[in-house]
Image (cartoon, rainbow, N blue to C red; front, side, top):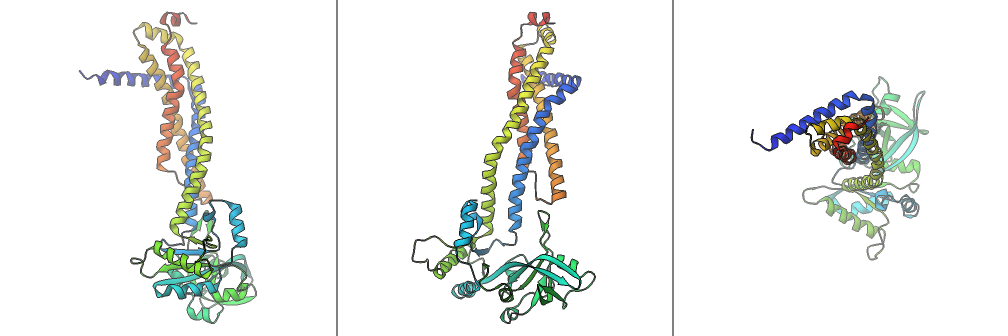
Length: 422
């Protein structure tokens, strides 16, 4: 074999074999050496998984907002760059969004757009001797199914007639069905919200859960009925807008038109004042989630480096101790013709093997934690693919960087002095 690469590979394989034998011969020391790396890698991977899960949670929590739907709210947290104080101030000082705003938007935008609205409150729901406390009561306009992921499983939805006459009718979620109508069909029957009776006209399709919290514990009533119950000017509502022809009118154009009409409505069109309302889209929610988790990651990831640094220091100390214990062995190998590069390679391969093994164990531990969190808490946590490669890359880097000092010490030994070592 004339290839120059073959001897190099042979030396690497031989170094790896000797490294594995050394690890097996010193199980306790090897375990202590890799423990710090296991913890460090597990922490890094878990941070990555939690940040990705947090981003997924924010996106899932806003999943009812379709990609082509524009939502107008009194104030949205994403408009304030995660500045909670500014958000609270905006919530208290900005004017509420009310049903006349919905009518104004519908009038100015015309038939090219679908305009709807929804408000939210809580009331106890009762039927017979059973009571559900704190049920989400949502006032909605007709056709809300076209603007959200809300769908009717049985019966019908809220109609314009229901709104116009402020009828006491409702559509209920699956949780309400399960708790109040066990074994019976709820369509046509009545439930009480507070002290008022409502006829059940429809049952919604199940929306599942987010972060372990069911999304099916709600009752939807006509928005006009909602305002009659809670007061027309007692709370701000949200307006939803969607272009009828999404191919001709893009979400960006829809957003621009909505902003202009809302500024006209608020008397801001001829001024340089900022909007006193927030516009939310699916893309803006995703961008906000990405920016927020990126900011948190910028702060947290450097802290996790401390855990890896500690693991690296442990590796270096243990390898220094190992080199000292094997001084005579190193002297014998040098006396038999081993070169400095052979000794250097063996020690580096051994330290890298230890840290990669620690990385794999840390990765496995992080994966088990991810599966446990998803199973027990329902949090949409995932293990990013890049974090797997990061874990292995970091493990190799720690082994090489913190193995250099012990390796150089071993390679620099004088064979005669090493053979005299007791």
